[in-house]
Length: 477
Image (cartoon, rainbow, N blue to C red; front, side, top):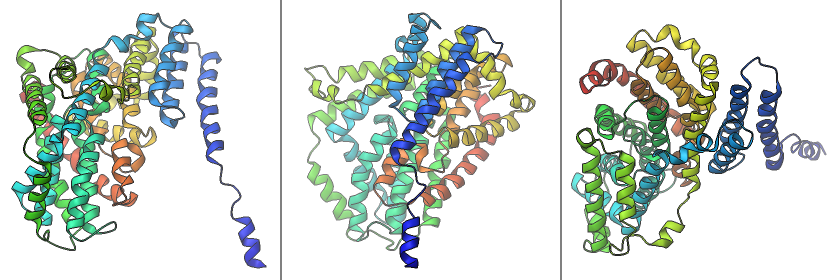
């Protein structure tokens, strides 16, 4: 009887998913409504812009709707409620930032459909060796190199996962093994970091667009790459050694490893005409990006141009069905984030929010090392509460840019550190890349907590050397 009584008491106070969603939706609507009507003694236009911006921020943070749909509704409200003219409310759609993302999406689709990404991963792995240690290094290097061809961490994890699963099975191991845990954990974590050190993925592309639009700084793809190259090298080596230390392998080498890798390449067959065309297009884009300091052609123009070239009928790389399968709501989100920043700036609501959010940082901005350290860890902590890295950058970067302009600071420098800080993560929910990697079941949440915290400490210490000593040499002062 006692057991039955206990059993009856167990299921009580757990809210259902539906109830939880209603609570989130109610808060998302009630708080902006209160901000709209509450007497805050602000300019009405600024107050109303802040109220709608809060609706967008809360909806993005709680994920009560798709990010793209939330952004579209927010832009509509700016226009329909008279806060901004149509051309300002939807100005992000006429900006090149979302179209940079469109080019990146097309790149990922090309690399995945043609089989080029997987072939290159096997080729790199084959060159470095088949011990667990060398395979791990090869997979991290493949992840890094593929960032240039597949500018989306989620797409790369999906592509590399097929390679990783095959290798783990060849080890004769599976879920729960140190080999499986180490391989999937490091592939997933570094994919998110490389998306920030190279302008790739929706989050970094969003941050870049806001730095240019609100911070009025030219963001060169080549300079960003060179600025974070030391960080990339250290990240690759430290992540490799940390993973070997945290997850020592059950088997030190891959049984018949060289034969397995060659067999996989044989299955892929000889280089196809499509793979060659995709590689040629992507190398042309990379060459143009890497030399943008000479010609100053926008990275967005290059990326979208090459992406659209792949859809032309005579090249036969992508077709109209490939385009129909793309998620265009991602573009809506990025465009809406840029629009929100421009509306807040035009209405002077951005000045109000900046004074509230970043005013406490003012005593620390006079010293490069201290301000770099404070900025990185502020972004790191902020990211914990505003889970999605895209939401984190889309909602906070405009405020940071205004803060930098007000205090005569380098918007490019602060913006780059802020974007980089979003790469440090300790919880799975903080990134779509982590969620995809976690879904394969090879690592646990506590693995991300442990590795993510150690890597974030390393990254923050590295910035204290790179920012004051190296960045001025490449023109970031």
